[in-house]
Image (cartoon, rainbow, N blue to C red):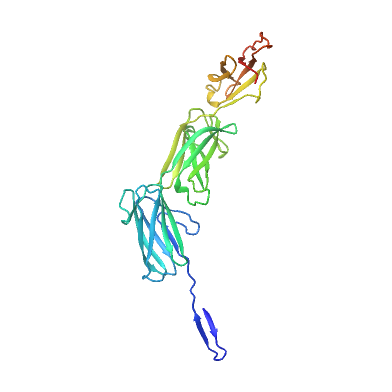
Length: 354
């Protein structure tokens, strides 16, 4: 409000009245509401009705028309909707939008949505001239996968959870939890091991984590130490409590321990005996005996003619999971000792220098 004061008459006159425009806001709600402040998605299941609400104090009567355009991604049904909102008072307008899972005609009042789709609601704010948007994600079943691998030379179980419903905010890396168990845990009255997963990146909906593996007949430990215990061949279950749609998603696989193959030097000297080492708990067939494993390791060289030797590795002790063999690379060529004999119990392979 701008006031004008007349010194001659002492009168005050209002010359101009300015009303500052409000920023409008759109929100969509079903199982959860979208957050216009953070941009977090709302949640709905296919078949739910979604409440759309626009708040804009610039629009103060039922004579004002508010329309929302609705699109989704992905959009296999090529559907869209234009929704007219009704005035409910104090600058607030509302309407409900029905969803379904079957293909329908565009702009018929019912939006066809596949699981996992993101539904976007657009409001064109006239003053200030800006497009406002709210988003709702349609629930989709989570998917769990797991596999054994090596991490820094140690056996671990790698776990991947894919669930876009947990991707609440496109700006944040969020977390999830799964539980790993086996009949051995159940028989011993132990609940299993909880594994924390973290989103691979903001707005991916893919959550990653790992769990250390230890070969052990006993599964008991002092608390949740991040180690899963068991024996090779135990059937393990990775379970995830999915909130939307409600249910348990799981992956089942036999317990196995990823193996390693090591040699002591990056560059080997010819005619020098060295020890090759294989670490693999799966090869420990009898925990009371020293086991051997054949057909898993082969030595090859590019000598002329090429040489190849199959190696049997022997366990260093009962239940150690470490298997070794002695190897001698025999250098071939003029000037080398033709009487060179590979030591007893070792494996020789012909090589050329370099």
